[in-house]
Image (cartoon, rainbow, N blue to C red; front, side):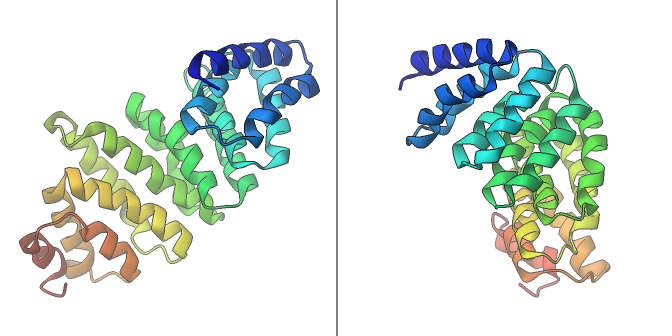
Length: 244
């Protein structure tokens, strides 16, 4: 399917959803999910669905989640992303619930890059407040999504100087997660630190030095390796006190 076809399909699905015809709507979506449809095309379908009234859309997203397909999470995430301007707290709560329901590594990655990450870009401070509880969430995938969200924000900022203060705020926000021990969550947080290190290497160097050298905090070796990925040799030495 091409972009025009997928957009038209999304509109047809949305019409059925708003009329309460969930089974019929899913019968249109299921063949697309069964094919190797690209994530951007699936995202168009989710966008078309997500602009509708909240309650029927949310009911339909629950219907999609039952099947547990990878592409289904893309549609769900894209639809939730369209709800951020109307119901940010609700969209975040539903995003968290779907991350838990997915219970697989690509769940937080797909949802984080389409819901919480874009929310950081568009509405930084309120989104940090919504994300704060995710840092100590009992579910490791939810904690992983924090790092994914930071990665997304940093990738979009591309190291521009006007975003330096926000990058510093994100490093401070990740401070309690440096000692994260679950490997699935570590990979997500480390991904966020790795991307911050690519675009804000001086900030990450100083932040790591505080964590590793001055405070001597316990950490996973993988967390540190990811954070050091894009730093120069001189920066790595400063960040680790000569231990890397």
